Image 1: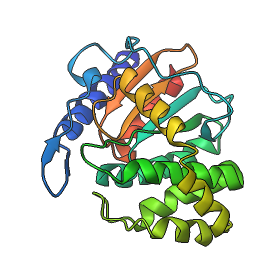
Image 2 (image 1 turned 180 degrees about the vertical axis):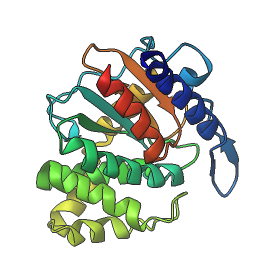
Image 3 (image 1 turned 135 degrees about the vertical axis):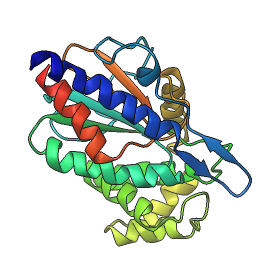
Length: 237
């Protein structure tokens, strides 16, 4: 029974790798495939993956769940990426099922890819302005609303950004002043640099870190039911 249980996670990773290898994201000018998940094509997932990042989690990060959770889930995302939009549903399901029980802490970091989505950096800055004006709760409300209404692939009208701020209860004038100032451009760039240093090759990109500091990186979209198998296995190790 124990041997069978130990096989669950590697098998899940192989399946996840197949799903992500086949995932594609679209723009008006090009189509690009996500790379296969390295954990699915290389070492067994139970072994620590040697990556440089992510940077230490601080009070400047945007978090859902308990800081004392046994698993940390760092997600790097692009607000104009269609697969990030879809993966946000997975993240919210994870927050509901695992975050509220104190099993997983979710950390959001920006990974805007200019080559594909020219508007994404400014949208990332907008979410930081929402956090600046309304704290962590407003940050998540802002991000969720962007994902809810954007058609993706740079199709969101920039005029919607202040409207989203107003929609979630923020001062529209102060928000616009913040956004126009470029106050958070540096932070967004730092997140992007961290994503690349951490092995990110496409979006969404996420890293699961267990209580022993072992890191399990994934490139690409993963549906909740597949992610659930991996989380449950890691929580029992």
